[in-house]
Length: 259
Image (cartoon, rainbow, N blue to C red; front, side, top):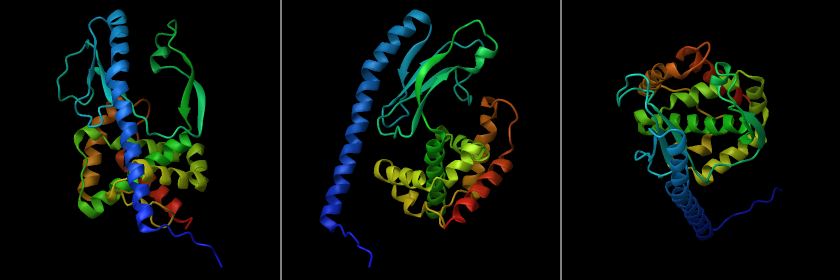
């Protein structure tokens, strides 16, 4: 006979309250650092290397954990353009760091300015298999949010990037390995429930057999519009939105076949 551990309702409520309090404390600590010391340090650096630029807070971020590095553009722009002359620096203190690897990073512009040294060594990066499952949880959550409550994303959320990322990783051997890594998938789901959960995300259903990823209805149309607007930020061959959805559908079927 299998042993079962039953957590009394009062204890479960206390644990949930403690978890929520810890999550809020982490958010507050991150916001204090990002809006204070980090912003000041970056502003001093920007004043030296790019005097016409500035570091400002992203007032659209409710967590106060995002900075914007605004720089003068060589091209005419407006406030409604999809790509703005700024670099968004998103921070936070709640993301998991394992599994991770250290890599050397370099920007694509090095292909043009090869004599410039833009390499950054020993950067801690999250393993792409975890990134894959993090984003799968986002896709499942939004599917359920629209299915049950007709939730639609705001323009600033730019959700189509997550669908593109999941589709492209899934087509890579790394993605195939991630799908078979059931232990990591379960770990990511638990962690997401603990620190990022919203009731409408229905994360209890984000398991083989009931995982839902394919967008539908008005939500799908909103994603398609966002994806079309995002294409100026992509390099190389750009898959159609239909191809992205087909890949997501194949992934959903792949995971659910494991139930």
